[in-house]
Image (tube, rainbow over all chains, first blue to last red; front, side, top):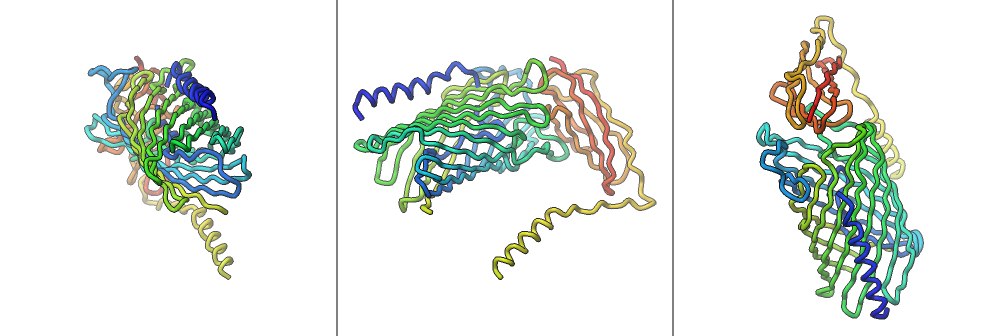
Length: 314
Length: 118
């Protein structure tokens, strides 16, 4: 690809990345943790990919807008932690069409309270499953360019109100939205093999329908720009710039006043290692560089994740 | 043979997890479950401020399950299993349900409305 085309490609990515900045919205409402794998493109026909990831999120300060909440804010949570796992299976139906299924499980979602001091409310269980089709809209192997779109739907793996020690859990730590939903994805990839460099972009929108309580979790949108540089033959360093938005949730009130919805920008360095030409492992650490919360909410402090995947030719 | 064994095993698992535990029948001399109602300590309460809700019930080994009809708000259990703290996350009326269940699986439910203001 000529340098003009490369510049155009980078411009397109930049426009997509920054065009969402005026929207309002965070990660990790029920059932929507950000994934940890970067193998999200189309698969060759007959190729099966199985991947799993673990993610830990820690939230330990109240934020109002972009700043720490006032000292006299009466929030009763001192800390929130999530430990989440996800299993994903994808299969190449044709050279242009892949099918993908995944399911998530919260090992725990905990809130540590200020009153009673140190009391922990804990949610655990399956989150949701999804089934998606991904279609390669454009693929230029010689120029290492891929544009893939995906559509899918989400099914809640739990619809009952979760009860812990005899009381219902707060919305923030329920493992499942209890609602169906839809997933839209767009993946762009451009490789520069002469420089052992790759740049790619993942856009993902998750839309949730209302659950049985007429509560609707806000749509969750991610736009990630990745820079991947192969530093050794099997080791790559990847830098991700991730924009995350979560719209405000809606309940039965005519005007919602819920403290939900946010917008985070996160820098996420990761190392990715491949071996035996089929296994991929990676580890990442998320550093939030911009946090903006609607109302007053616990804010993301840090998160880290590990992923492993294997490609199998059937 | 191996295939048949797997099928039988799978059917067995499905049957096992599908079977409901039978209800315990209360003996004639069992204390009745009497759930007289719920009380709260404040007429109105501000957003995120806890109100104390008490379930008044008598019977044998009673457990309580607390939910809100809109699924929102935060409950905190206390050392007394008939007492919880409740805080609303926004200004509205929260209808709370309390299910009382005794050791014989007899149940009764009561409601109370908590008025949450800004």
